[in-house]
Length: 313
Image (cartoon, rainbow, N blue to C red; front, side, top):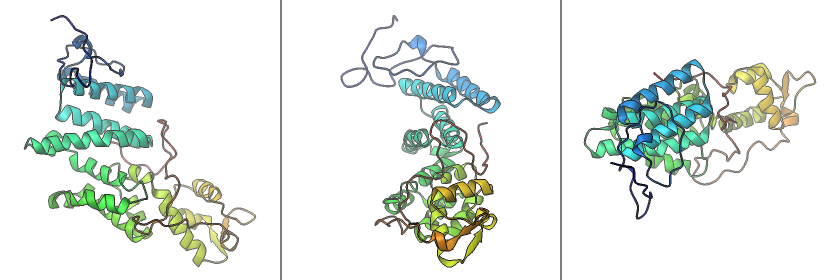
């Protein structure tokens, strides 16, 4: 039948009303106000090929802007046709992975909700999230870690998210790791936190990069208060888990720390005049409110942090 222009939204057509016929593997993401022409929408078999092409290009020559645009277009085609299941899950999971790899908190966050909704739909249909995605536990763990980025009320929010999980889910490796990260944050146990950071499975370390700096500040405060008169920056680099001395020095300098004349030691006496411990707010488990996280990204730039494996195949 001939294409008829129909408005989307209230009183108009609903998502899922289109049956695409396009065979194009790539198309730009479009801000739609009208039901698109089926000739511009790709059916599920083509979307599978398009998703594989995005992954192949990302591995061979990463281009965040292009990958982001293509993944949004794939997700859009899924929504317009009411496609759920493995293809839709894979589109959001892939988007989350590249967003984590590039430290893009905005894209990481915006993909978590629709992916969680897909997992919920799978449970409602009686098939289970793992029937649609073998990676479901991994991404539930990322959702838990995302909830720890915001300091205020993270204890309440994280506890509620954990309570909603089944006992079997809580025992799964990726989710159990995320739960233990939450426990370390709540108790202020920086030693356990950094151990979990180093041992982070899959891409959990990237998610932890968003809030690792505030844990570093808690540890740094303890070191400055208890050690005198100097701390070797080489030792501090290891204790705070930086990749190299240069990263550690930059972090300390940004926080107003004072150093020896040769910049090889932190002067703890001079640094004690610096306000290291911001106020604690109720509901955050005793962890201080800090501005910012461990990642300054957000525009698709590579994160210069501890390497973690990326799985796009």
